[in-house]
Image (cartoon, rainbow, N blue to C red):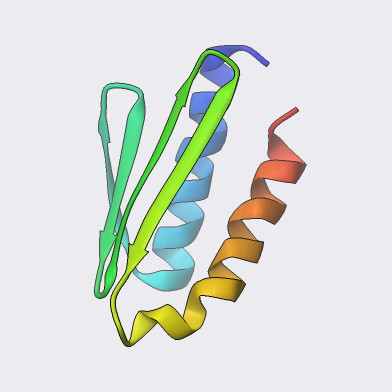
Length: 80
C-alpha cells in the first residue's frame, strides 16, 4: 500500500478516535501522536510496518480491550 494511503488511513483513524473518544492528535513527521485524558499514544509507519503504541492511565485502562479491538478492526478494514 502506498505511503500516502497509509497516512490517509492513519489520519482517518485519528479523526475517528477524536470524535468517539475525545482525544487530540497531531502529526510529527510520519507519526501521529494521540493525547487525551488518561491516553497517550503514537501511530507510526515505515517500510511495511505500522506500529501503534498506547499508554493508558489507571482509570482508562479498563477500556484497553475495546480500544485495541477498535484499532485492530480499523486497520484490518483500511490497510491492505
